[in-house]
Amino acid sequence: MGRKSTIKQVRKMKKSLFGIIYMSSYKIQLNIVDLKDFSVVEKLDSPSFIQASSKAQVFEQDMTKICTALDGFKQKLAEYKIDDFKFYGNKQLINDSSASFIADQIKARTGFEIEWLSSSQIVYDKVLSGIKSLQDMQDMQLKQTPTYLLSLGSAMISLSLFENNKFISTWSLPLGPREIHQINEITNETPNNPIDVMSDYLGAKIDHLARQIKANSNAALVIQHADALNNNYLHENDSAMRISRDDFNSFYEKTITMPQDILIQSYHLEPAVAEHTLPNLVSVKKFVKLLNPTELYITDMSVITGLLMKEKYQKQYLKDENGNDIIMTYAQHMAERYLVDQKHSEAVKKFALHLYDRLRHVHLLPGKDRKLLAIAAQIDDIGSFVNQVRRYEQSAEIIEANNIIGLSDQDNEIVSEICCYQTVKEDQASPFIGGHHYRHLDPQIQLEVAKLSAILRLATALDASHKQKIKKIVISLKKDKQLIVRAKTNADITLECWSFNKRAQLFQDVFGIKVSLKQEGMNRR
Image (cartoon, one colour):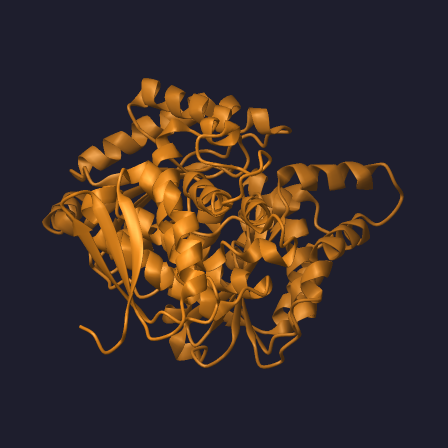
């Protein structure tokens, strides 16, 4: 009777119920959540996955377990009459071909379609979950405190900084099952203390951050995905709590020498999670020493929390005050790191977005491309830090190695390609639209790259002198397939006109529209 009553109550709030399925390298789980108040109505987990010794085996050796769990999830969603759900998978440990094969197998055997999340998307979702943690911990006086979020994951450790509840920056370190397995193998072959070896390994990984981050005794550190700590300290209905440095130190000393079977029993851990517990504890200790925070907190909010936050924004249960800011802030900090002229990049971004908006019936690009254009305008010149001669190609290489958080692999590729094709040299070694490199891009993104590159080239030319001589532009598209860009300025823009004419050819080739720049004094309407 009690269960039937609960189901009946849940069906009344069906409109706000949402199902999220998330497959990590450890397990696959279903959360049925009321998006209005973020309450978890029901949660189901699969048995733990076998931890693969190679990337080729991740998920594939657990396919039967995955499909059996998905069939159970399907029944549970039907029980609650939920057809509004999404299925995500962590793609950090597999390549594109494996992801395609696994997705095909899952769809054929269960009918579910999976959306893979890249490393940059995982970090972004963790940042969103960090913001939710900070919001929930405001009563703990964190709002005015610089706060770091240390997120421990299956493939990487990420550290994000927040000030006044706003995202500032993030750093990522590669540390996954294969690295941990290799460390374990090394320690098994030597008489040295395995914790010391692990500490040296992690210390070398963290060392470069020590040169970028200064200890701040006024800062707080929030630790995420530390299952053993959470299971030991968090109460059943708590999502976050403060622990003292003494609490952590005593827990560290008690736990660090535990055999794995004792870890599993003591902290109710799955075997796959227990395998990461000691390296994660050593990592936390290293970061506590590096940051020297005045406060320590633990939270059980995770990637799933971030994914639910995005869904809540999309369904307008909550105003999105952070999503785009996080992505653009990350891009801006990348530009600052590589000493980009910020006034120039802001001017170029303003012109590029104005062109994009006024020409939406011409370019016919999807709405998300506006964001990609803004990001490219912000960071297309970062390569100048390395090489002025081939700066745009260098920019593309830097972006490929430092993906923008929050973007899919494909969107990151689009941004890097837009930057690459800002080169307007005539020599054969330079990349050009239609060339060998372009022809090998995925056909789905070729046209997007060409159109966005053409728009950004015009915008860049409008501040060729880096002096922001042009404050405003007016766009006129004539019936005879002519686009006139009127620059409102009394300054000498000879350089801008020369650059514009040089960069206009791609726009004409891509859109079939002749484009010209005309100057009008500020006193003219």
